[in-house]
Image (tube, rainbow, N blue to C red):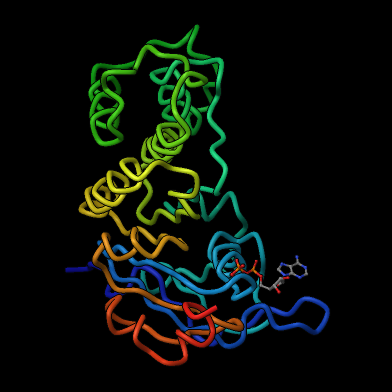
Length: 248
Ligand code: ADP
């Protein structure tokens, strides 16, 4: 088959801001269908890494490949989104004055150049897709609710659903559980594992309980490169990780 061996391949990626190395020869491989957790202290380069993957920041040196062959350093942000890389920023940015359903409908239609739900009729297939996403993000029972009336955690889920409407092959998620209740946090771990059954997901988080719940391979960044990588037990018992991150 022609299935890619790696979905995302970073090798020797460096980014400097005024001589300061935000990324210092970072290497990382994400496999197709993988859910990966990224941890590390503030300033470790986690955001810069996401910026490089999504084309917001161009690396000074290094290789960034999508599906083995596509050189992301040669593509712009719109191009990279089109390739199937979706990014969720920390703060939810849903349309508060629209219903949950309309938020998803707008997200589904955006790539088709449709920006209003008024003049566009959804196909049965589109409706099924929205119902499917609603079930994934645990919001079927609130589909007619205004997004403004959702809890903080539900808004985060809705935004994840809006990204799913674009069918990304890789979903990058920045600190999804910050500000969530314990119940929402636990549910988010289940939800992300479900989503990763059909695509790859990279999630940056500080909540170690959540990371442990995810039960996936963890990469700890520090000073712009990989400090440790492996199971949460392996990574969290690494003296370098304790010194640079957990013990702080
Ligand atoms: P993290 O997300 O792990 O907290 P960042 O990637 O945001 O880390 O930052 C890594 C380092 O790069 C930090 O020291 C930060 O101050 C610096 N940095 C990030 N973006 C810029 C920028 N646009 N200009 C200057 N310095 C930056």
